[in-house]
Length: 386
Image 1 (cartoon, rainbow, N blue to C red):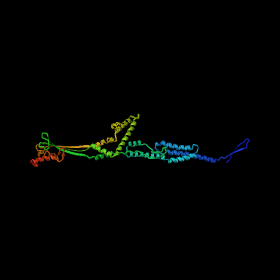
Image 2: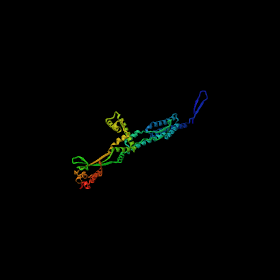
Image 3: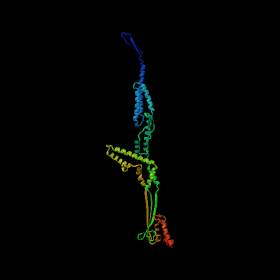
C-alpha cells in the first residue's frame, strides 16, 4: 500500500514518518463487530420474546419479569464497552440456561397442573356432578400455589406438584331415604271385644241372661313410627360419611354465597331492584345456615342434615287405624245372649278364638257352657238350640 510521508523541515535533517494502514483487515474487523452486535441484539430480543411467551400463572408475573430483566442486564453489561463478541457468547449461554432452567420449567409444570385442575371442575359441572355455585366456590377458594423448595441462600432445590382440593360430588339422598323406608318394618296388630247391654240399657256381661243387646268391636292398626325412622336415618348417615361431607360442603358454599351477598350489599350505588333481590338472597341463606336466621346460632352439620331432611322423614311415617263395630239384638233371658235360637252372640259372626282386650273369649264361653253342663244341662240346651 502507498506510504503516507509527513516531512518536518527547519534546520534539522528531514524526518520521515511512515504508517501502513491495512484498511481491508480493519474493515473486516468492523464488519465482524457489527455482525456480532446485531446478532447479540437479535439473541437478546429472541430470549426476551421467548420468555415473555412462556405460559406461567399470573401469580408468577413478577418472578418472570425479574428473570427476563436479569438476562437482559447481563447481555447489556457484556456489551457495555463494545465487547459484542463477549455479549453474543453471553446471550447464547443465557438462552441455553433459560431453555433448561429447572425453576422455570417447574413453574410451567405447576401452572399446567393448576389449569388441569380448573378444567376438571368445569367437567364436573358440565356433567352435573356439582352445581355452578360449588364450582365457583372451589375456584375462588383454591388459588395457584408453587410448592418450591429453596436453600438458606434462596437457591432453588426442587418442588412437588400442589394437590388442589376436589369437591364432594352431588349425592342423591333419595336412595338413602328409600333404603331407610324399606329397612324399617311395619308395626301392625289388632284387637277385638264383645260388650252387652240389658233391656234397660245397663252394662252387663255378654254371657249374662240379662243381655239384650250385644256389641262387637274390632280394631286393626299399621304404623311406622317417626322416632324409629329418625333413629334408622341417623344410623344410615353414620354409615355414609360422604353424605356428611357433602352437606358440610353445601354449608360452606352457602356461607361463601352469603359473604359475597353481604359484600355486594355494601355498595351504595346499587339500584333498588338489585338491592331487593340481594336482601332476599341474604335472608334465605341466613335461615338456611342459622337457627331462625340468627347468625349467633349456627347449625351443626347434624342439625343442618335434620333440618334438610325432616319433612321427608316425616312423610315416611304413618299410623293407620281401622275400627269395626256391630250391634245385634239378643232374646231377653236367652242366656249368654244366645236367645232366639242362635241369635245374639252368634249373629255377630264373631270368632271367639281370637284374643280380645278382655282375654280369650273362647275360654269365657267354654267356662259358662261347662258350668251349665255340670249342672245337668246337655249341650243342646246349654247353647239354646233345643
